[in-house]
Image 1: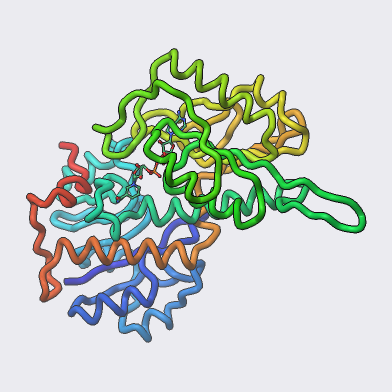
Image 2: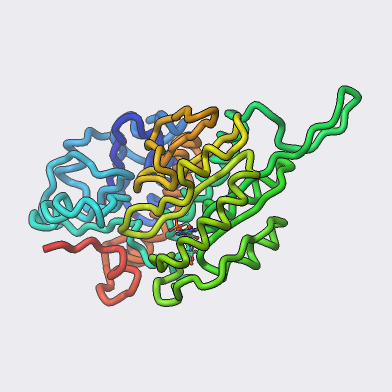
Length: 357
Ligand code: NAD
């Protein structure tokens, strides 16, 4: 079996498999072809891949011969019948593209579709990348914030600790809590899923409770749309915390839907000048009405940073972890001789496969 790894288009800095991962595949009798320059931005040179036993090829050669093609974003290559494509193609939104590829005979695994079950954890690209996003969101906020995070008592006077509010305690939110706490901030957290309360508290943060959330137990751990009454109560509770917050990290997303507006312009006006909002839900519209993805907005003395691509600011570790997730998935769809042997009845295979006819 030949596995091909494509170079991502700028501004993406990550690569879907680093040299270390290529070496692991090669040990299992798999031939690995890397598009020249694919790993450069993640600090993996063509020579690193060659030393791992991989061959450097062009995108055209990979498109023409590889059995499995790895990338992060949708590749712009000629799709041939029978090829297996694995990436993070946003299949729920890019339905025309998926339809085109499958009509040409490709088998498409769009890894954001993978069910969020215990067995899938080692293949869960959303988690490995969201973890980085949560960590980097806090560092980005600290950089843009004109004050300290930790409390200081110095001869020149005292500094109060920063108050951080985190909206959405999924993978990114939990990492943002841990990182904010490490930097010495006081942290409050809100999520519509009461199940996360204990995790939030175990990280040393305060959980803001709003009674009456819709039951999300059938949504595979994801959030669901809330009633109008709940949204009103939630807004009132959030408004109190927003007014006190110096830093807000928002991560609230609902799969396949636009992100909920959790911070209104009125709430932003009540915030202290110099405060910073980092909106990780920017790619699906953002949790504030002014968020723009990959842009920093200055609004009434506040800085609002919309960034859905923070993992790409840590290309080396992000690529390493993404690649490891993909290697684990490849193990699921190959046999011990390194040949494709997909069990079409496996729930993870069914879940990750993007099939729009
Ligand atoms: P996500 O990115 O879809 O959403 C981020 C958070 O925002 C979620 O916690 C969600 O409940 C919250 N949210 C949504 N709407 C909100 C609102 N109106 N107000 C406040 N918060 C709101 O979440 P995620 O990090 O991808 O995690 C989704 C689920 O998957 C979680 O239950 C998580 O525990 C689970 N998970 C499972 C695995 C696994 O077992 N493989 C791995 C990671 C995550």
